[in-house]
Length: 532
Image (cartoon, rainbow, N blue to C red):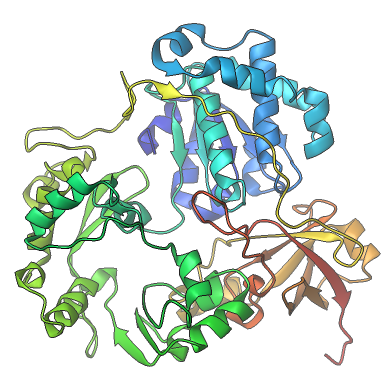
C-alpha cells in the first residue's frame, strides 16, 4: 500500500475494485465502513457480484468479468473530457500525459458500455465522484490482478490516481490488499524470481556482485528465474525436483488436472508445511513446519509495516521453523557460514545489512516503534506514506493500456462465466481453517452461486446438487441461488479440495507478472439426479 490503513478514514471517496473486502479483509473493511458511516465518505465499488460492501456504496459498478481495463479507461476519458483532472499535479509530478490522453479518446462512455455492460451515465457519474474528491483512495485485490490483463488493470488504477493528484497525500494512494499474510514480506526478501532482497534486479551485475560480497559467495546467477506458474508446466521436463514451502497448488493453482500430472512426473517432490495437505500427500518427503504461534520472527503486512512475532507455544513433535529447516538442509548440502543462524534475531540483522529499505529495522526498535519500510537508517522513522514529494523513478509515468478480452470467452457449449474467490469463514486452501469445527459448521461445503434467472434456464434448484464443467474438468457442488450473482456469471469459492474450483479455471497467464486468469473462465451447468 502507498498509504497506511488508517488513512482510509481520511478519504472523501474510497474506490474499491475487485475486492470482497468484508470477507477477505474483514478488519480492514471496518475502516471503510467507519469512513462511510461516521465521516461521510462516499464509496465506489467495482465488482461483478453484489458483495456486502455494496450496501455502503454510493455507486456500485457491475462490469462483465474481465473488462476492468475498459471501465477504468472510460472513467479517465470522462475526467479528461470534462476537465476534471489535476493539471498542476500532472505538470509537476508526472510524464506521459499526452500519450495517455490520446489513448483514452476511443474509450467513450458509450463504447465502454458496450464492452462492460455498465450504463454510460453510471460511468460519467463515477468519474465526477472520484475526480471531485480531495483526497480519494483506491483499494484493490485479486479481482483486479488475477486476469491476463492484471498488470494493465493495475497500471490503469495508478494512472487514475495520478490523473486526479491522489498520490502522496493523506487519504489517497493506490493500495493493494495482499491476499495472504506476509506476502509483502516474502516479496521484500527476494521471494520473486527476478529480484534480490529490496527489489534489486538479479540481472544487474553490480547488484549481484554486492550480494556476493554480503553473502561471502561467488557465482550468483544474473538470469531471472521462473515464477510458480511457470514452474508447474516444466515439472518433469526442465525441472526434476521441486521443493514446495507453505503452498498447496493441488487446490490453489489453475487447471488442477494439469498440476496433478506435472507433480507426479517429478523425480522427487519435497513439501514443507504444517499439515498433510493435498500437495503433501503426493510428496516423496514431507518436512513438518511450525505455525506462527510456535516461532519467532517478523511479518510485513499489506501496509509495509514490519511486525514482531513471538513464540507462544512449543512446536509439536519434530516440527521446526521454516528458517531452521532450510538452514539444516543447507548445512547438509555443505553450505558455508551463511546458513549458520542460531536465532531469528540474527536473520533480522542480516536483512538490515543486505536490504536497503530495511536497513534501519531491528528487533530492539520493533519493541517500541511501528515501522514501515523504507526505513534506510537506524534513526529513520520509517515511511508510512510513499511518494510524498517524488516517485522512486522521479516523475510518475502514465502507461496507456488497451482493453484486451479475457483469454477464454463463452460459446454455446460453455455459455456461463465462472469467477472464483474466498469466503469469510475459510482461508486459502483450508489447510488450517478446515481443521476448526466451528468454521466448518459455518461453511461446510462448496457451492455454486447463481442468479435465479440462470438457475431456471439450466433447470437447477436452490439447494440441489449440480455439475459444473469447463474445457478442463468437472466438479459437483450445491446450488445457491443468490442476489449476489449477476446473469451470465456464476461464483464458486476455491477453498474446497473435494470440489475444487481450480479443476475448472484457466491457466492462461498475464504476460508480465505471470498471474493466472482465475477470475474468468467459460463453464456450463447441469442438474444431477437426486440419486447422485
